[in-house]
Length: 497
Image 1 (cartoon, one colour):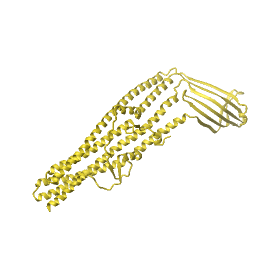
Image 2 (image 1 turned 180 degrees about the vertical axis):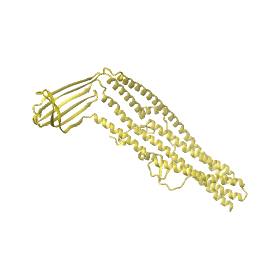
Image 3 (image 1 turned 120 degrees about the horizontal axis):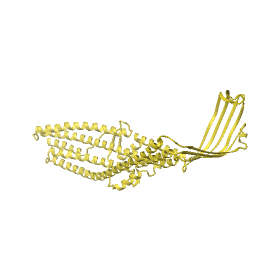
Image 4 (image 1 turned 180 degrees about the horizontal axis):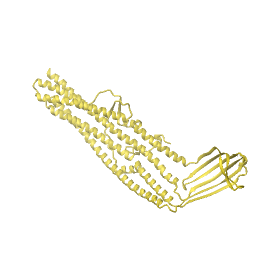
């Protein structure tokens, strides 16, 4: 009877090999589902998308500025009643007279910027109205039915040219930065995912360990009754049970913390409970250092940021260099104008209006201010070049290290999976030998500890593999599984037109 009872209790040890925690759960998530949820609903994803939209509308504004613009400038009403100084030729002196005046003005203009020269073509029409009250009561309309003109800085730098070089680059960088941020979110949430997976395994192991310790203690109590084990061994089994209970409580707290971190990052209900499905062991993926470096140089937003910084510095050098010399601007226009006491007559028989205006500003003495500004801009350009070189070298070094780590992690996963299989087989064999009395409790405990360690190591190897892979994707913005850049079909995927 006693032996039968012991065998029934020993059969409960078969549950230890599963290490599965049965509990109520709200949601089951795989790694891919977790990443998709993070990239869609996390606060970091909202921030990344809104940051991109800000750059998108800035680029739309730049493109709109390259198109013809229509503007209406108006002074609908200006009334003035005041004493004003007037010269009286009869008395040869200035006297103050009261003046009442009503004035209105409007200008309708179409303008087109010309990127090649940096000038602006314009076509406009004007109408003005002036009425005086009092002793000198009269009204007059002044019209410019049509006028065609062109304005141009002759010696200044061409801002349109620099915008054409910089603005598309800034928008391309914004697209790459969005993809980079989303890949960074994938990397971050993968860390939370595997932290929770490890916490769940730790909890499962602790729970199974408590069950095992309790079972072994009960077996020890029965064996001690028949003097099969000593009192010291029984106390050791009891101590193991107490320690297993403490381990379970600590594992439960770790599980709650890891669960809270993940659901908070996913912007889920803080009381939500999820159970994770570990990804399968990945297949062999060959990523060479040369391919990774090529994709980094093509796609990484930091390289575009560096190019933008260089262009901004070069623009500053040109602007300060040109402004340090003579400034000159040209304004040409040809059109018609007329003035009359009635609106109708102000448009009859207009006279030709030609304007040629050349403005020149020559700095004579500024005590070296402009020369200093030029030297500062050139030094800033040199500093930017050095910073760009250092940043690109650091980035290339980082990708080389990450690719090497990734290759090592693939081998470690194979080793970890083999170790887990061997540990499972060793534990099962030791358990069978223990059931027939050919192994002691120390051997069984050692086999169990090795199995637990192998399972933890396997999850750790999976985590390191996927984190390395996501880091490579983040740095290169390239999908090496499909051999496509992540920016492929960007506009359709994100609804950008």
